[in-house]
Amino acid sequence: MAYAHIPESEYYGDQVRWFIGTIVDVNDPLKLDRVRVRVYGIHTSNTVDIPNEDLPWATVSIPVTEGGTSGLGANSQIKNRAQVFGIFLDGKDSQLPLVLGSIPKVETKRNDVEEAPSVKNEYDGTSVVPDAPPPAVRPGAPSVNDGNLVGNTNAEKAYNFFLSKEGGSFTPAQAAGIVGNLMAESGKDINPTIVSGFKNEGSFGIAQWNPSKAAGFRLQELKRFCKDSNLNFRTLYAQLKFIIYELGKYPYLGLGKLRKAQTPEEAAEIFEKRYERPAPGSTQKRINFALEINNKLGIGAA
Image (tube, rainbow, N blue to C red; front, side, top):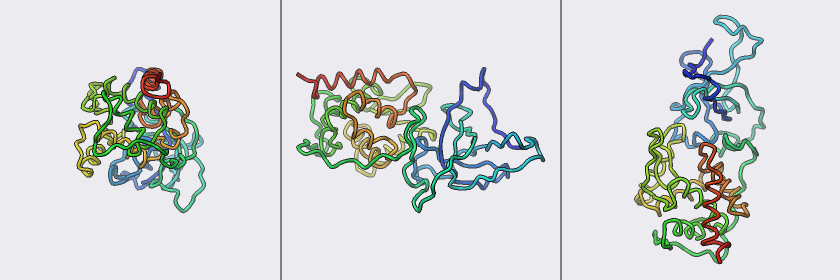
């Protein structure tokens, strides 16, 4: 029987992280019934950026009614396109997946991993319905042309950008929620060149895009987007443009929900859980920054 290598730990449960995903490969070269899973919220749906062959092999759990030892019991019968639930045995490294079971779904003509995932990330575990498309551009929104950002500080420039047509024409409350998150990620001055020193992970920029495979190579995608757009990826304007690009390309990052937010607090929480997806514990900090921006620049300003 195949089994995953369990990382050494004082208590294995401290490392567990759950996931939902879609099976994309069942042809295990070692004939151990392992599968590859494209995990919602971790692996992008773009198979060019993250080819299926780069995904880690996942061990599949079998029922306790089977023998559970070499030569005894049945093999897994799971198929490609199955939606599965499982855990990562190595926590945030997310390279040791274990599939615990499958989740029934209704197959449609377009129901495959090329579409946006239909579940939330690992922190909120709520609705499994995809986000609705964004509404039309808000009338009267200001414009931002050729990187001529308006404002005295980077926070103010970012806020005005998200109010603009180019920046998504968000409401003042929604813009404040986004900017509050960026302040929490890269400092009150929203530093576009800041590099995270946390565990040498190398996260970069105003949203701290991570270069790891587990995070979906988002930093590499930022650089690729900027190269294709003839932009300098180290600039505030380029990174603001990339946020809009990601929100539009990947519905699971929360654009539909963000469009419905009515308050800075609500917008800050949605952007945190859907777009940033940090470790738990910083929600109030993000809300406080959002309220600060809203009171200074938005509808809460005198």
